[in-house]
Length: 139
Image (cartoon, rainbow, N blue to C red; front, side, top):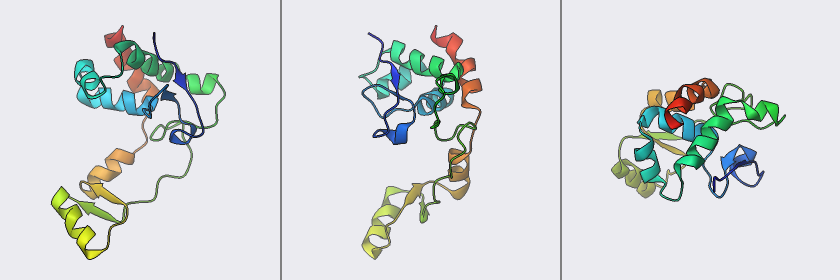
């Protein structure tokens, strides 16, 4: 049975997620876009079926968040007009860097990567258009 896309204010701030997970529709769409292989994505989340992924992508491609008249959209989607997250306190290049910060007692919000990679990661996208491109490959 396909898991529906749900909204629960207690999970991911009310963003649309696959029921029983913390995977938002935009996370699924953007991950599939970068991985470009559904099988690889599903191997990472063995509890999901291809139908679950297809439902999340379809939800996004049809902009059901607008149709459902919901106020909370997926983060990183251009439909989301909420404040962006606070920038991290530090950018690190390896887990070893994390341990060094921990020893200095300066561990706050940390991003594994460069500042440029962080900016790309939080950049808003027209996720529903990406979803519309991906959906035919899932049918």
